[in-house]
Length: 166
Image (cartoon, rainbow, N blue to C red; front, side, top):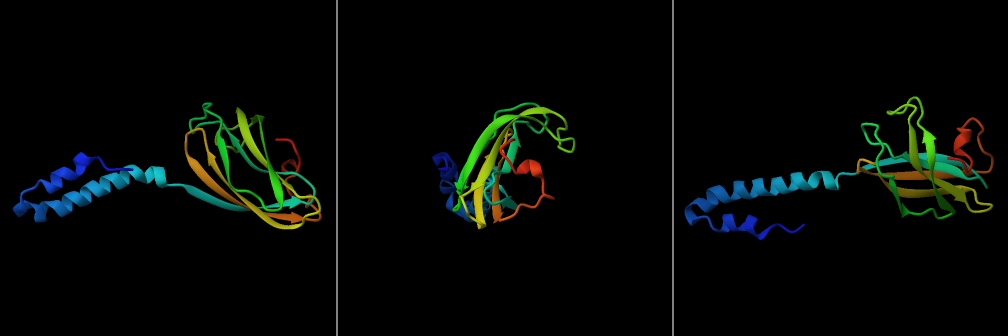
């Protein structure tokens, strides 16, 4: 971001006797005010988590509703793939779901965006993806998802995640 040219002129225009005593604190205050304005735009949360996916099966990695913090409907979330998987592919889907009872907006019908991971045929081992999610309130979160593709799926895991349905 370019600073407005008028912001720099008052410091340079100060008389020589006052410039040493006023210029440094004033410059610090101006710089701090610009940092405060830029702070929220630069802040971004990164969440790292692990997922286990059965070989040859599709599994849901991310699901984001279009609900704002006040539980009202907002725009659809935007999901951007920053780092694609090396040994599989990602599939995005949109749909409607009722939020879980333990969600911050319980039992609310919402439109959702979801990302599913499909490992390459015959692949087992490690993979990973990084996605950025812009929610309905405009906040951006980066998710670093580390994936383990196993030969045999663990049935104790959430079966609903392993499949093609939202």
